[in-house]
Image (cartoon, rainbow, N blue to C red; front, side, top):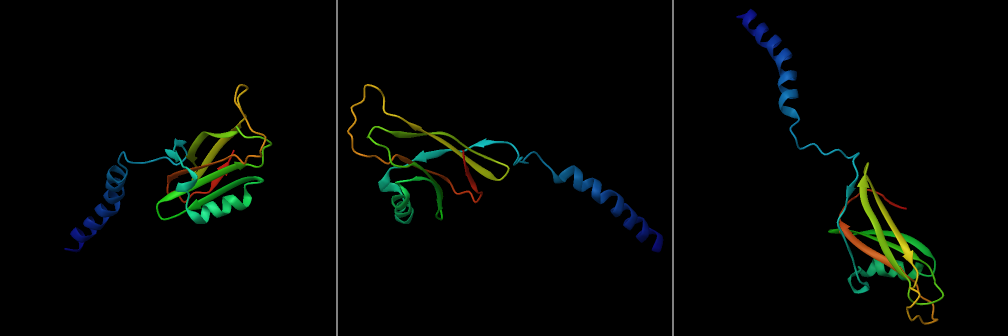
Length: 140
């Protein structure tokens, strides 16, 4: 009796790790080190959560980089401060996640040569919303 019990223990010690390795890792592994492009939506001022909009309005005269999370989305805002005329806009050029970090890239677009601009100051900024991710955001 004792030898059968010992054989079972030895078999369990030998075969358990092998079985775990064979069945433990199936094809659903996601490598966080690979860059993944995120879907996003550029939103209008009326769609920005009020608390976040207040932060943007306080900072809009200067360059700013802000994030905001609610229970559903991650919001990212980038502003380029006061510009001398109208006609400026902001383009989102990249939104990716890699190594547990979200990377946000945008650029300021100047008025086109044939565009009518007024000489009132403008404060171009963009706000996007994307899936709720708890990673830190790095602005490029």
